Image (cartoon, helix red, strand yellow):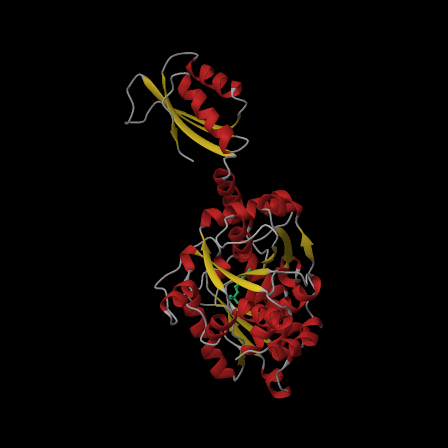
Length: 403
Ligand SMILES: Cc1ncc(COP(=O)(O)O)c(C=O)c1O
């Protein structure tokens, strides 16, 4: 089983390529929760996520012959970029198999870091099968994304940094996909700090580790569904599961809506771009998915910031809806001149800004002499959104809140 000595041994190797990332006190999130919150900003890591640490440690221990033959892996996301940069820096050839429909931004980033990218299969498992064929045919070393002790030890160097940057930490909160990150971090902080608690966080739609712990054995999900694509993993690793059982005190889940709110708040308040998988840790703190005291020092690990701009737009809009800052309502108007103007006046009097308005007389669901109107509005929060709806109803409009 992974030990503190493995993580300590990884440190110098990892530091040759990876950055020591900042740990910052968050006034906003401390005020919002009552606890003392320090964010571990792995979003500022090279390649935009922690994955370079594990990849570097694995590649840094290859023999001369293994280095010459090169490495191979499959990934649609952060692991691809971590392996690509770690291999290139070590002068080791790398082949990364990515599913055919991987986002173009990720494919080109991986190529830019110097890997030979093979596009194969419609999903991760088909890409992984191809990567294993290449491993066998070319005698390359397969760099697993999480189920490898050297990879886990590399990720654990984040825990060593936390122990030094925030020795008063009471609770460290870590996202879980296959469990490599949390295994390493938990081994490191439990080995170096007294009385520290480690909480793992998964997305509700990809909760294999939480399910496995509940049932007492590794479970494989039939499918996964979450906006946090970095942790959309169907099963915990064989090597990570025992470490999680030993060192992780609790594993909780958060919903996609909660993740969207955390991403939005991190951008707005902390000016930090964090992808869904990286924000589950803060989401769990904000939602009190686990219990904590006011005098606790909590360190959520924000594990990565690689989010595609289209996804970000959707996630932020959804976050604003959840926070009562974006409201979409539907109502009906008598189809006569001035009806729309009156509706707009009521909205303006409620101090709401209109983003978009759709006026439709053709819907089969309404009377022939009526018009259906959908309005997208900016509100200041849940209370203001409720006031806007109440004011519309007070003026005789029947309102459906669509979002
Ligand atoms: C941003 C981010 N956070 C967390 C994880 C989860 O890491 P692990 O699979 O080691 O649990 C990943 C995995 O890809 C990730 O990309």
